Length: 284
Image (cartoon, rainbow, N blue to C red; front, side, top):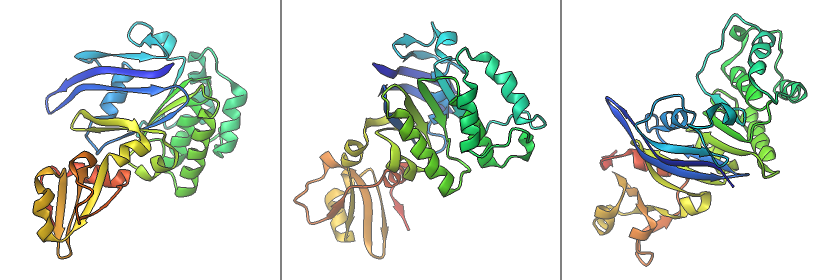
């Protein structure tokens, strides 16, 4: 079964447009959702959650149309958004007592296990929490009501490397049983190198590619060569930069002749994002 099926989502703003966004996430996997700031990640997530009005498209979660079964399906979704502030003068305990009433399958034992794992003191006020601790609290709420689909927008933002690594281990534990799926939006691509099964890449409001992680990376090549070799591939490259040592740039694997003398390697997710962000060839 598909945990998430996004079909042709469109949203128009004065200075930005989400255009026919489509991708699918199978149950029991982690999908990394990547793109530069302003590419449309948060708009897509809010559209999936029916938090904003869209001009077109459909979202199906666990086989059901989100627009038709929103209240029912939101019991099955755990959501955490980076940057959202809680009532800062309230204590964690007070907020949780209010929030858990919205969920039919809220599990206090599970919630308290996450409080312990994340080292959260429920007597503290939200204003007393660091950015990282606010993220952990948001995740504790999202994980404590039996959700089958987790939609996480920048969940590792503000966490130190040790805390981030612990969180990535947790994500892999959650999907191991095959019932829980995670859509994980982040600009920290190294996190996705560690834990994602699939990658969906959005740029300028459009999906560039959605595929299994290694297939996604293997569909591009990072080229390095002398400036004199640039003319061989210049017209086919996504973007490139030139310096005193020669040139470096990104090209689709299908557009590159492997018999060429130009050095080619499989790029990282970060390198793919960086070169797609360079709309015009850059010289440094």
